[in-house]
Amino acid sequence: MAQKLKFLKVGQVTVAVDGTKILASASKHSAVSYERAGEMIKQLELEVAQLLEKADPADSTPLEEGLTIPEEITRRQERQAQLAKARAEIEVRARARAAVERMEQEQKLAERAAKQERGELIRGREPQAPKEEPKAKDQYNFTDPESRIMKAGNGQHFEQSYNAQAAVEVQSRLIVGQRVSQAPNDKQELAPTLASIPASAGLVAVALVDSGFYSEAAVQQVEAPADGKASGPTVYAAVEKTGHHRSVNDLEVKPEPEPPAVGASMTDVMRHRLQTSAGKTLYKLRQQTIEPVFGIIKSVLGFRQFRLRGREKVSLEWTLVCLAYNLKRLHRLGAGLKLGATN
Image 1 (tube, rainbow, N blue to C red):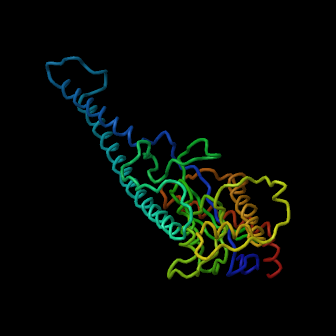
Image 2: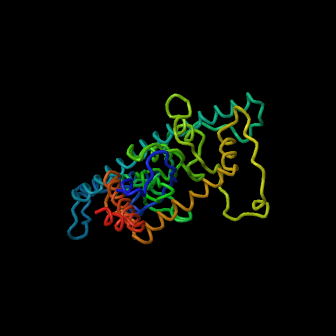
Image 3: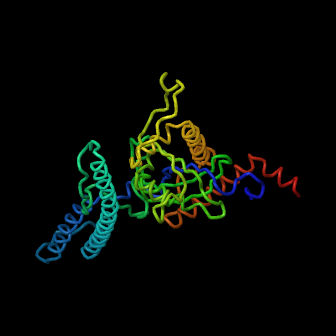
């Protein structure tokens, strides 16, 4: 409808991509950590052993009214099984996380080797191989196991959440791609979120993202997805966090920066892109495009928590929320009047 009414440009679009944390239909208090689950299993084993001893006729001390030894043993064994399942799932997640981190480590090692060949100074420690063992505080939620504990708000507290992603076309401010992720941060989300944009929207020319999405591997995956040749959209991403305040030096007119040397790292290339006049103009669109969309969804539409559980159902719910936002946006753009005029 947006394309038909000329509100949405088709092909060679510029999109701003970001993610926001939406509360799951589960409390973080329904979660257990890997370490705590192990402690509870040992405690339950001890209690089962104590109850079995109590079943001996020689121990005549009765239980409270309404309680029986077989039922109490069964209840503890069922809880043990649930906790064991939680630990097993956490171990699977830890191995999957290690596989991703291993790829990142290999990428960083390759970057360090390339810098060494160019004679550049290498800073920092060599990246260490990831561990496949779960961390003590890795969590499993019994109410919605597919949700995750994530930093919320300004990052000072944690909530049981999903990472809701959106790609917004900068001129119309319509959502053209959306998906739900279980990742607590956006480091691996750029390529799959851009892939969520349907073919009917045409090719994406430019993608604008903040520093949370940036990694050399992620940009390379988007810009040269198949044969290593630049065939995907051009990414404009901050390579580190910067404040919104501009100093007096920032206000002064500056000449266009010198292009990076041949063989420069993607980080240097990205810095150069954002220092050019064209890059600055484009990147300003990111904040004024994506952040109002999430603000309207949360504050105007009042959507701050999923009502369904499980990633598949939550993804459906997010699709409906994005559709509701788009219909509201089309109304603000005057779609009703335009449709009336055509009829």
